[in-house]
Amino acid sequence: MNILFLGVAIFILSLLVIELSFYAFRIIQHPDRATVRKRLRRSVAEETANPGGDLFKKQVLSDVPFLNRILSVLPGVERLQLTMNQANLKYTLGFLILFSMAIGLAGYLLCLFLVRNGWLALLIGIFSASLPLMYTRSKKRQRMAKFEKQLPEALALIARALRAGHAFSSGMKLAAEEFGDPLGPEFNETLDEINFGLSVADALKNLARRVDCPDLGFFVVSVILQRETGGNLAEIIEGLAHLIRERFKFRGKVRVLSAEGRLSAVILMVLPLLLATFLFVFHPTVVAPLFHDPIGRVMLWIMTVLMVLGFLMVRRIIKVEV
Image (tube, rainbow, N blue to C red; front, side, top):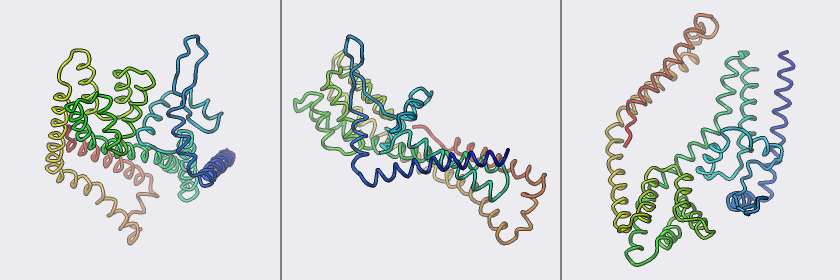
């Protein structure tokens, strides 16, 4: 059974490697095709068969038709696709899933051949498969943080444009032209939706849905309420920009004050790993019972769980929401 399972795993891994190799070859041969396809996936619309002729954005989850049909019915795919859009990645969701499966199987087989421990190999495989998702989330956090830094200046520019007599859409256009990624392209997409006939309120709601930024939600709510109830929109946006700047200042103070706690958390996590590595390299007989003795393996699992719980608790303590 183990030989059959390994054979199936190696066969699946080979198929994934072949598919990813063809995808990489196509990217190398046509480097601009990925950018063009990404724009088409986000902007091309298709007409439905109903009499009203409504237009919906066509979303392609994978270049492989069979995989695209499977992903279109799986739960949680839309949220993962939204995360990829927020990270502004050039490849498709299908490629991300295939790549995760490939490195997960590779990590599992490699650890199984080296360590001969099925449970440890399974954990290594799961961790390896989660690396692309962790990278995607990291890119998303970086891009959203950059958007949040650009937002106060963009709001100030929109407020100045409104005081100069420009319309709200003209102010957003000025901000889209002035700022680069991520704020400029996101504002441009909102303006495209308005130009295609979507109401300003709905276009702004779509913008808040695409961008994971709480401050942007305040801006969207303020604009929608002002259009319904009236008021000085330029003054509202200026006040919001000032509030966001003050939040940045306060967040910087909190980060400085909590630096000692974060450093302590890093030291508490790294020091046992460094000590274990030192003993494993220079005194392997000291740590050998942890891997070969049943009681030692149980103690090793308990230590790992306690270290993870301690890191999560310290992170929870030092994390201050502003």
